[in-house]
Image 1: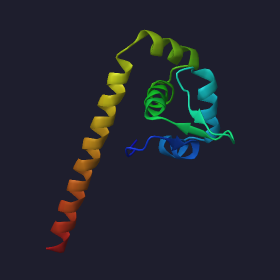
Image 2 (image 1 turned 45 degrees about the vertical axis):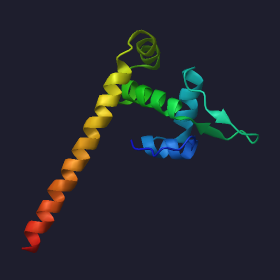
Image 3 (image 1 turned 135 degrees about the vertical axis):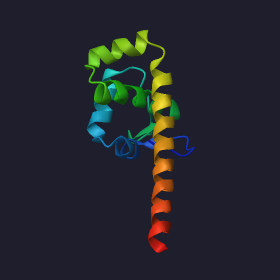
Image 4 (image 1 turned 135 degrees about the horizontal axis):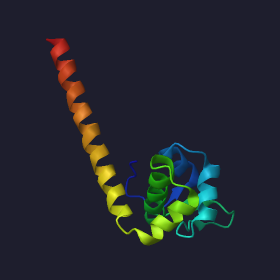
Length: 113
């Protein structure tokens, strides 16, 4: 997931970045008290970088590791290294994407020769 340095993201942007429905983000907001998006007068949710960081941890536990919501809740409160693991995964995914770009540019160059 890549977000530029913007203070707030809409629920649609967040849902698209995680490739999930906005309803799942709203559900997680109800289930996990650490998700506290700001709301405008119309009730539209705007997620802070802290919310997105917390959503990354929830996504990692529930969607990638297969935790139940209760298990994820417990892990978030007892295991402080989850954030470090998610940050490491993000960095590794970035390195992987850069290496794939390099590989593709080399392949394109070889085909042109």
